[in-house]
Amino acid sequence: MPIKKDCYAYDFNYSIHNFDEFMHKYVKEKDSFAICFLNMTNLGLCNYILEYKYGNVLLHNVINKVRYCINQKAYIYKFGGDVLLLIIPNIKCRDNAVKIIKRIISINNDIFLLAGKKIRIEIKLGVALYPYDNVELHDVFKYASIALNCVNKKCGSTYEFFNANMYENNAMEEKIGTDIQDAFINHEFILYYQPQVNVDSGKVYGVEALIRWNHPEFGILTPSYFIDGIERSGEIKKVGRIVFYMACLEAKRLHKLGYSDLIMSVNLSIRQFEDDFFITFIKNILEITQVKPEYINFEITERTAINSTEKITSALRNIKDIGIKIFVDDFGTQYSFLNYLYTVPIDGIKIDRSFINGIDRCEKNLLL
Image (tube, rainbow, N blue to C red; front, side, top):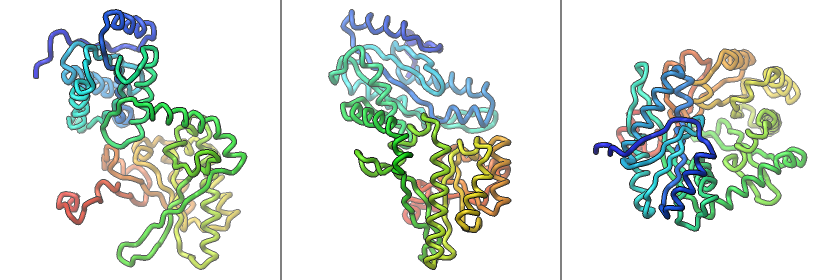
């Protein structure tokens, strides 16, 4: 499919003045259009793993492929970070938009070769259509942003059109964000414990501590509802400390009940490695609770492992020196460059369930 000659793209920082000018131009001409926020979720990782110049090359390659997929007159703005803003005029119906968006999503299947490494880009799109779905002109930009926020919580390359439920969920997220400090004061953060089972014996050998928020209005909330708000509030390190302390108290209780060999697994945020007193805190909590370090496992994300700075690597070594084991969680969800496993001091990996699902029915999954 050749690119039409009237396709063109801009790659500059988005200007609200230019956006308003565009809006009024198309409304005056009584035209319809789609506003799309496109998030390239792996672009930042590419900058970390390779060099920023390769990230820029990848960005321009993606933009060219987006132009190819749209194949009509459109505006492409570099909105900032890993996000592009697409303005696609002459969208007469949702089906018309879906066809274009699905072509853009298919970029996920393309392999980009950079510095000898094969890179895939994960594409997420939040979309709002004007003048459809009761979307007002002054809200279309905000609604596309809300749709992107919603789709960012999903796995894999996908898209979402704005709908009224998203607006309600966004209002809920804003309410949750304002309630974070009250959650600390009222001790509303609690832990659930997911059993870890030995497949050979069928016995539980450990548990993983999973944070929940017992919100007074919304009930029990999983991290997908509040972790972004905690990140924005700058309190993620505080939450991490609370989780570790509570997990150690529970480990102590379970050991006293006779589960003396039970291992407690705790997830670490990359932000916790920014805490200069993190290692001292770990030692103090282990001493206070009298939990032996060999009964604690820490789990870090693959992204944390890939992005390991000298400070993170040093902290991981110090943790191992204490006697705590370190595992990479959900291995296989990012780039999975095996060479980083040689440089990061870890004890093992937890393979992502996408590789395990159907292992008894799919020969390919079994081989992997």
